[in-house]
Length: 311
Ligand SMILES: Cc1cc2nc3c(=O)[nH]c(=O)nc-3n(C[C@H](O)[C@H](O)[C@H](O)COP(=O)(O)OP(=O)(O)OC[C@H]3O[C@@H](n4cnc5c(N)ncnc54)[C@H](O)[C@@H]3O)c2cc1C
Image 1 (cartoon, rainbow, N blue to C red):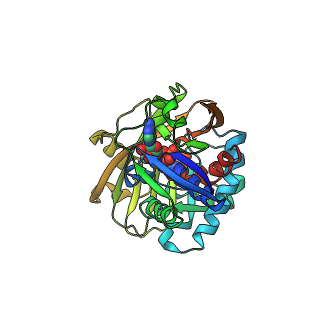
Image 2: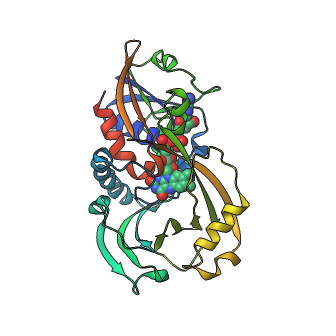
Image 3: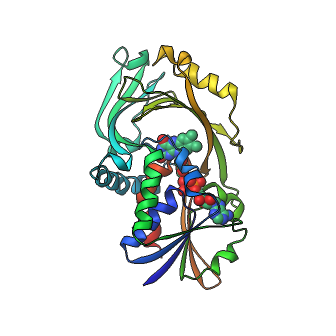
């Protein structure tokens, strides 16, 4: 059996690991963080690209991703994946984005028919991925397929350490960690803070001028901030206030709702393009697969398929 090492157990490493298992590889994931405490589990997450360079590569990989989420959805609600209606609303008129071609039942709606009184909106069906259920689901599937997850005492600090791993090929899915590991200056952190409140009556989701409300099974995600160049994950009171204010047009009573949790994560944005590329180091094939910004969950399966094609 061919052996494959993957560095990183976020949504990118886990999805790539599972797809590799389906292709007959024995896979070991190496991770600096507990897989239940990565950026990926903090993701909101709607199937919609944002804060990513949406070029030909991203557009090519979004389709297989959508397809795979369609299959996962059929396995039942325990995967944390379901179809939802998403409104993307704006204060200004917008040209249709290319990614809308993957979404279902897309409608363009103008004021005064837009919720919240916004000027322009796209309303469509897409997937919602509740990462609090989905990431454990991926971990279970990967383990049930015979995969091993090794939690490292210290993160890898050089690429030559990777080339010494006991497999012919290695995939680097280190997300924001690649900035240091690969000395990749194209990576820019984009901090995002989210608040979690109780269940709302509303079942549709909305992202309006960047503020968003995503109802989940047991609670509601309310976001968010996009803090370019900010590397820390510290929760800020000012950001919480901004998130509440920004979402008041949709749920006026939002400032009175009890906040259950607040957290922040770093979107691993990469200038120019997501990196899915091969490099040979010390006789080993290393595939880099990182820099998915605010779209890692959305693009995960297509990204995995493309990365594996480079081995
Ligand atoms: C607030 C917020 C909201 C978001 N909303 C959405 C959304 O709605 N839709 C969407 O698609 N995306 C969303 N995202 C983006 C998404 O979360 C990321 O794109 C995705 O999590 C990136 O996954 P990853 O596997 O590359 O990185 P991570 O989840 O960060 O995983 C990286 C892994 O690599 C390991 N690692 C790193 N460096 C090393 C090293 N040197 N040695 C060993 N291991 C290492 C880590 O321990 C970890 O296991 C959101 C992000 C945030 C912060």
